Image (cartoon, rainbow, N blue to C red; front, side, top):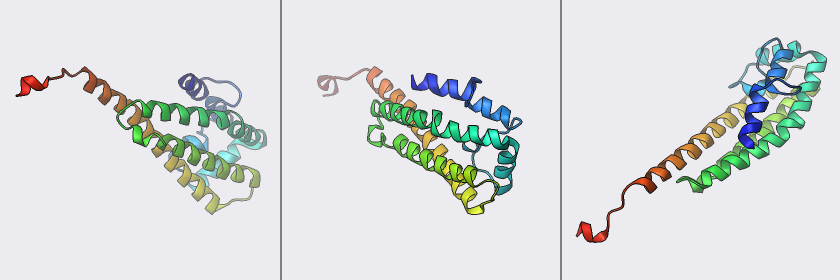
Amino acid sequence: MAIGCFIAENFLTFPLSVPFMRSLAAGASILDMRFGYSLSSAYQLLDALGRSGRLDYLAEIWTVDLLLLALFGLFLAAVIRRGVFRALYLVPILAAAFDYAENTAITILLVRYPVHSAIGVYIASGLTRVKLCLYAASILMGVGGILVRSLKNAAPRRSRTTLM
């Protein structure tokens, strides 16, 4: 379910999906889908979205994204717990926490628009980078941990008597 929701939100076009938001911004990626951004690029996006697009962005953050972050974080934590990196299962929960913090920072930028806030953009961009790195690490730990565990389980076992 988590993977299906993630794919739908990021690749299918429907109101409040990532492709829908991109279409509102004349093809530009929304802030939480970029690996960092500058003051000028952040406000170019907010300008391009227009008033209704900024309202849609707020709605996306506090409806669809609100649920997907929890679902995705918990899914990744469960996957990591099944592999060899099980002790690190809280990393995707931390990623989701940074994602919620990022959404709060972006919300402040959207609500305060057209007032420009360099520190607000700097904080939001930094949170985006940390979030993306933590999610990437979580995916690698989940997939890698299950692969390593599968390889260990598939390796032939030697008996103690053969070794002596």
